[in-house]
Length: 235
Image (cartoon, rainbow, N blue to C red; front, side, top):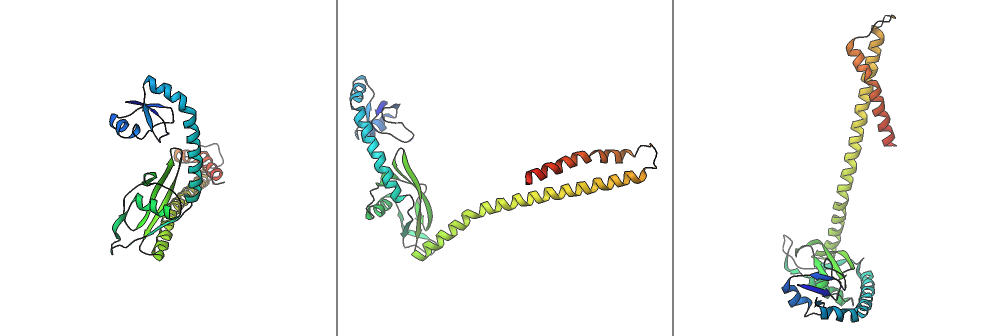
């Protein structure tokens, strides 16, 4: 079914867009909730008359949502819950629980505005997404622990784990660089030996050095170029 959106929806469209949706979604949600109109000629004419009012209303919602976002975007959310020895919660933490948490702090957020990336049934730190409007949202973390002290420990452990991959990558890069430089030094030393050998075999005449020495000595220029390139990259 084609409908005219009266609200902006994430991944669906903006106000005034005519989009095709499933019949059930339109009949059971969008149209009854006055979030869309069936896209027929009569409703298209109706929308053109109310369009400016809808856009003005939408602008105010965005402004209010941004103000709310400033109140929560840097908030540390901690839930203290009872749990078994293996960390399993006696129950779970739902979007409704999180909405109540904000409402107690005089911040109005509906459960439908809260998206959990995974169900919260054990102690730990979880990611969640707050979507106040199609164009206004933020990502937060919720720390679920059995005490304030354990919540602090979990936060420190989480931050430490987040730093480890970066440090490991940096260490690998340094080792690879050192190995490369070492191989360059060995190659240069080898060429030096070859050059000395070629000089010793020369009797001062115009005689030609051995085929092996000529081939190895000819690689000197290539090695020097590699060495120069490595030095420039290091700088």
